[in-house]
Length: 193
Image: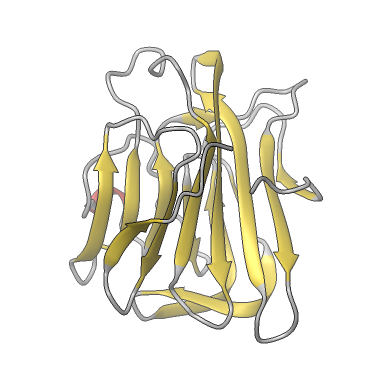
């Protein structure tokens, strides 16, 4: 389900800039936990305050993005000014059962009309669990690039990762879930959004 946009955390002609939102509960991935997240314009979210800075995607595990990361759509993305594009966040639920949703609405760098719209949902009561939802996926490949993006989770320092896809356009309406207890991706789509 698409969020009602409530809290814009990044906008206006951005390329590789990141925002660190403080959140009211701890989240984590592969043993790294924090109440601070790096939200990367290039389609990744990392616990803590260290950014990989990587914009050119690759298959996982990837040392170029050397921090633990949820990777809903790692590619060279851009937020164009004068549009509704941006990165938004919303916290829902009651204490101990809250979710943090981070919604990305942007385009590929150099392809302003090639819209990509997806969301990451993290869970307070199940640290590490993540759901990626895809509302709109670009119909053209990024300008000057020959690939789409990388989807998965990783912690390169320990070699832990699970790649859902690499250079494959996710279908609109796709919703996938990953849990650390199984280290497996599961399609939980209920239909086209």
